[in-house]
Amino acid sequence: MSRRGFTLLEMIVATTIMGVAVIGLLSGIASTTRNAARLRDYDRVVQLARLRMNDLLLDERAARDTVIASNFDKALTGGLDAGWRATISVAEQAPSAGPGDFALDRIQMEVWWISGPQRRTFALESYRRRTLRPEDMPPGVVR
Image: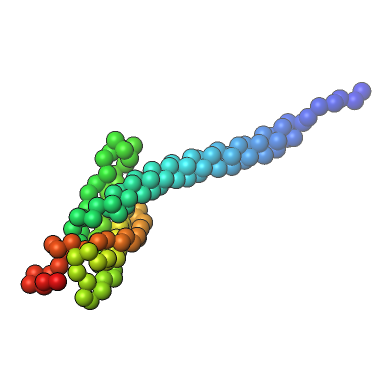
């Protein structure tokens, strides 16, 4: 009389193999979830940085050669601690430039956010053309 079926040893081996496969899949899912959260935070901060850089590009009256900094509103960052700091400096200007002439400003911005226990940063840089005004001239210079 022949019996068909699996032995206890075969069942233990199959269960062990299945357990190892499930643990590997769960580890992969956890890693993917962490990466998705990290990328979501990065994407959110990049969008806010672009908006802030656009504001700085449009604001010709922003102070030059000083650090401008602020935190992003937590309602916009999804509760994430994040902020920025920027410096606007003259990149190029003719030595004899006067009011009505053009100058090239350089805007350097560093954006930061807290992701888990780490502080992460990235830098943005842009240039803008600006028309010089009388108040842009150094004191005592008349043109």
